[in-house]
Length: 134
Image 1 (cartoon, one colour):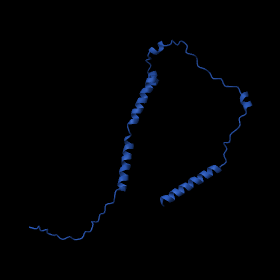
Image 2 (cartoon, one colour):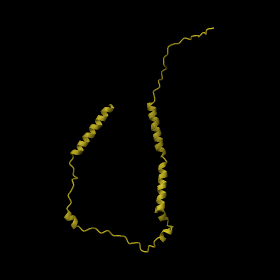
Image 3 (cartoon, one colour):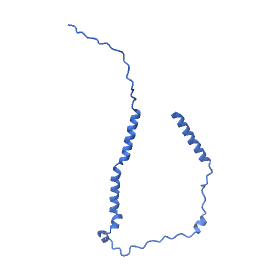
């Protein structure tokens, strides 16, 4: 099957699929909201957290917590994690590199000219002596 035939059949399949999808009855028609019913519903209240009781202002920033859990989830830890993930992203996976190299070598081998095993037939040659003029 030629490439042109494959392209034709794929395009025909896509066209049939699109026609079928457009012919299917859609059940997601928009619903008009009833404003009176929406306004009659009570609004949900959002509980607010308690304010920072006993917050001592800028002096809290100078105090370093020695909590290991806080050190794992704090801003310094997230910066370290970001640096570590960027460093890991720059190092390629050896399996992916080996796969790409294997594909390149296979494609080159497929496109290499075929070597013939039969020796080329040549016409018999005679040995000629070349004499120089004296």
